[in-house]
Structures are given as C-alpha cells and as structure tokens.
Length: 151
Image (cartoon, rainbow, N blue to C red; front, side):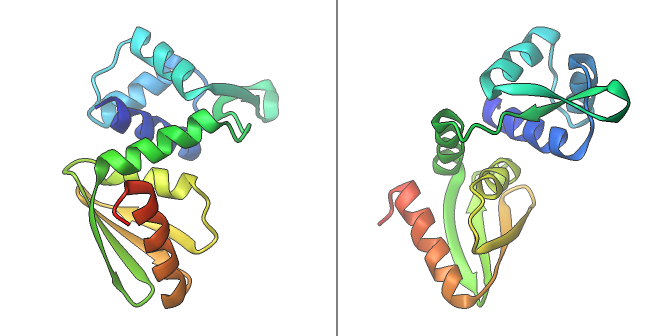
C-alpha cells in the first residue's frame, strides 16, 4: 500500500500545484487512500519532496532533482515487486502487474526516463508502454528483465 501511495503522490504533485500537506491529503483521500497528517509528513520525508517557488510567491511540492540513488532504488523496488510478465506488439510493450500495482509500476517506468519510452498508460494490472520502435521495444524488455531478475 505504501508503494502505491508513494507512486500516487509523485503522480499527483506532477499534475497539480499542491501547496500544503492538507491539500495533498485531500487529493489522496479522493483517490481512495485513507491518510493522516502524520502519514503525509512521513511520505514527504521518505520521498524527499521539496517545495519550489511558483509565480505569485506561492510554493508547491516537487521531487528533489538530485538524481539520488535512493529514489532510483525505490523505483526499481516498485518495478520488481509489481512486475508479473510482459509481451510486445510491434512498438507497444504490454506489462502485466500484480493487481492494483499498474499505476505504481508505470510511474516507476516513467521516472526512469528511458529515451526509448514515449510514455505509459496504466489500468489496474496492465500497462501499455508506447515505445519509439520495435527494435527499441526489445531493448526495453531486456532492461526490464535485468531489473526484475528474469535474464
């Protein structure tokens, strides 16, 4: 649940200008995550979120762009724990995940910023990754196999 919640937080702060912990809690509650202020505070610390300036003197939450190994490891762990299988259809990569984990795994894949991947769309247990070419789809599959340990 924590991994899914963290992935949802990353998704929410990328889509919305969230200024306060209360606002973040409201968004999470609307998404079906029952959270307290203490949970939000802990999540912000664990995700290493920071506040950045917006126009008008306001601030919003954002991921620290330090390229930190800890954040990379978190994404790798999400991918390893949620991954079930994958298959390709030309330049489309279909990734099957544990039920309820597709959004978290898709967020992890997007966060890796692989040049071959144009983007991911997630359902409950299935992700569709648009890859730039069939050849690059094979390369992405190899990268995923190395990460999840199926090589």
